[in-house]
Length: 450
Image: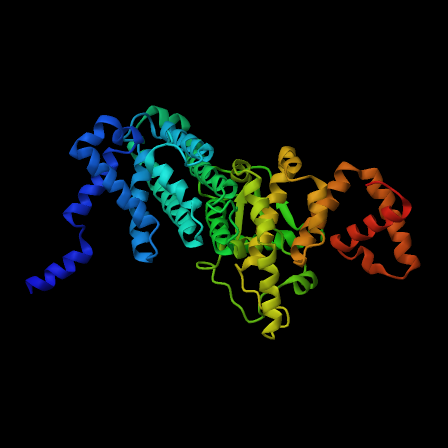
């Protein structure tokens, strides 16, 4: 029985030596602690050995070793943000972001000024192995979750503080902003960092994981009854409304329709044309992918949160996943699904969701619209193999034309109506995509600059 207890304990308890290494890395977290005179004593040597062990675990070929290394690294990273360190939790979060930015400037050939936990985390992206780089996202996801818990604990501790009482109205929004700022800093580092072979991230699995983290922080599920009300309201809109932006929001977890972005439900005919889900598929509201829920009107995104996310985090994966989405659709057709083999939450849904979020950001932020390349970028998406991407892009461009160039739009629309009547082809006006295509072609024929 004692041997059995020892065996169980070996799986459920850390060895004393390993616990000691974890504690050493918590107290010696900067390069200066292991350079110069510190190396001449046992503590300095133990610290160097402990950090080397952690590095070996993170870059191991064995999954279990990497997972334990990621958990260890996650503990060190949350200590960087913990209010128990110097300064307030808010100043620690700001410092954490600055350190990630500093690590982004570091070429890893010299010693970085950033704390070792952040350097190790960012160093994962230098690996040529995609499964090692995936560890960066695994650590980040756990860090964001624990950061939320830490902020909740901080709120409870400060609940009787007059300062918190003064800011209570915006407290939930402040917490969301803090977590999103950490996420944005880390993901920007990911998409801008090259591995040791001088290549940017191209692994589809890692990019999809990045999008999953992004959606989990931005999207809020809507109760089923409320989701139905969204659908009822949208049914009365015209077919240009591929998304909705409203103007007011509560910072709390409670959700209002105002100042949120949500996918408008198309009419029944359009839904039939563009749906890629199997007819017998039933979406579970509790377990369905967030991208699928947003596209079905069962989740929303507060515009305050979209405003905190850099545009690059939306358009970069949208472009990178182009080929993967095409493969999904081709596979669905190949297995005899009649083009409806794409399950909710697949790559096609993720790209459509990224585009909707990008459209929402570009609608409210002219600087973001300019950053992505303006109309030229969205016109390029009209050629996309995914019909929803082309459809949403055309709806956005058409709305911009109606608001930014109303006279030109009316003139071209009148000419398009005449052309449709003459050719007996009313499909030119059937939906935003065909309408915009018709206007652009007509403008080209007439030598009209749009």
